Image 1: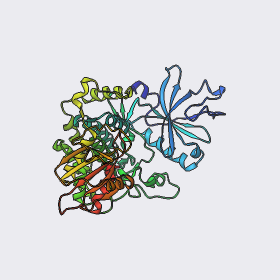
Image 2: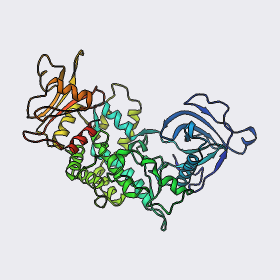
Image 3: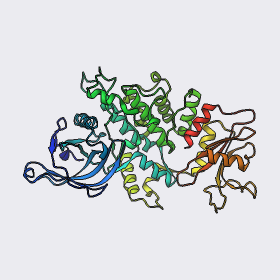
Image 4: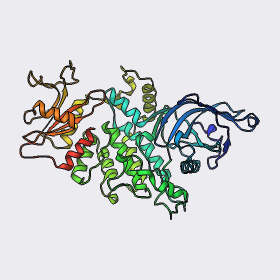
Length: 473
């Protein structure tokens, strides 16, 4: 949004705009709201178009705001889901989100324009970011066999940490604000190459305040299970979210951007050794700054983690130093918005992307991070003609129902088809000689079976096995 657009509504005030509700909704993805005739000269109208997305309590629509004599402006409207629109508590949460958003003015935070009061329903008008959510961009890249190199990862994370630093550095006397639902889904990557943090529906002040049942602070402090489980720190979300929780979630974003997979929910009993394997899974082959960032964001003990976003900013600045990352991200977003099944990146983006083979990459990461003597990846081939992305060896034997796609290291012979089928059906199996077999999901392929050989006389603990299952799902 341009600065001229931003001045349509003062950043620290909210207008309540009256509109009449429509008689009928056109469809589940299109809605027309129109002010009554006597209000047209006084208030602008919104024409609401396609639905852009939905979460647990609200949905977001693209809309056009007409405010003569200014030209029409495209905006995003956040509206409660149909079953929640008349819920007073949900309305209070949306009003509070509007109040918080109206106080924020930063290049890496989506702008709040106004609260629209419809009497029995409220909606929130925000800056429309033309681009892709971080998770969607990552999924598209993975689907086409590409990963972000450290400079672009550093650029995206620099935007995230910049937004968090702003939230932690408000006026003297104010407690820092906590986003409390940071994830790649809530990081928008715009066509202009900028990074925007969105969705402040669970935000609150760090450490909370004395609560009462009727306070709005209590509404957000409850945190509704703390956003997304994999982004919650291992000690669990406190009743009142904290800055440290945001910094941990930023580390999860970094891990996902580097690995191309969802961060695992850490099982009970995870120790430093297991966490070291998780960090190594994403950081293998990366610069030292990447290892340090993941280690310091994801540490098991809160006291050992980053204590401020400013610390993360310095690491990200080093990762992207000397690279035209904003221009590269802009070009990447615009290209992926038009991507077809045969998408390839423009030549100018090749220095910022890494091409990889999905099964070989997975096998290599697992061997390095979980100290496996050998890792093999198999695809179930019964009744199908398979074209593996990488076949390091011929089919093990003619009667096998599985085709080998990748093997890294030197270890024992593969398990029997019965064991592999058990892993494919149940997600987990162990051969008689201690080989660990796990079902794995790889973008663009059917479920695979990964076999890890920890070496003769060695094995994986129940915690490590649970962690591996979580990473591979």
